[in-house]
Image (cartoon, rainbow, N blue to C red; front, side, top):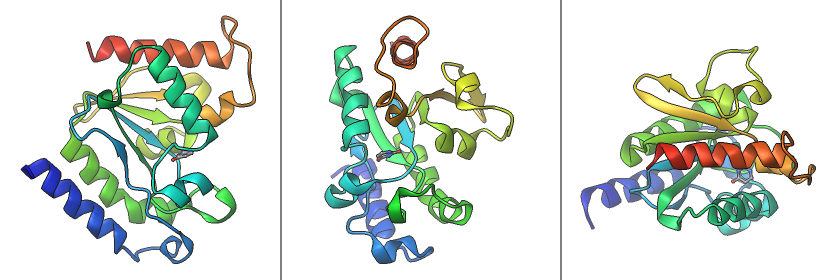
Length: 191
Ligand code: URA
């Protein structure tokens, strides 16, 4: 095992033992990551849902399947991405993560970013956006598709795929169309 893999394994084991917030008590599995440790793209979503909690894999439920479908349709490969969330344990009834929960988990997320060192970080949905870009007026609708340079890292917010589950149209200007456009921007950035 090389040093990135060993460090990543160690970090995951530490997260598995974490008791900093109450969410560890009711979770089934820790949801730490999926994908490739050497990926140029890191997706950061909100929090694990039921399917993720059962499997330990982020973005494995309906919304995640839609994200993956779009990615593969556009020619991305499994080795192009690493997926994580702002928190690693499922909140009860899929409620939004609370500020303290995100703060408790942040150390793990920061270390994941440091280790993976991606070319671009994709903020999936409003919760991830708020966690990295401190601008209360900036909604996901305004921010999506824009590239933000923060402390030497590139971030691009996109709609959360769960939003697309409610909007099926692929016509120009519709959420699915914009989502695809943003994924194409990401493809250009990793070329
Ligand atoms: N939604 C998220 O934000 N993350 C997941 O892992 C699954 C659904």
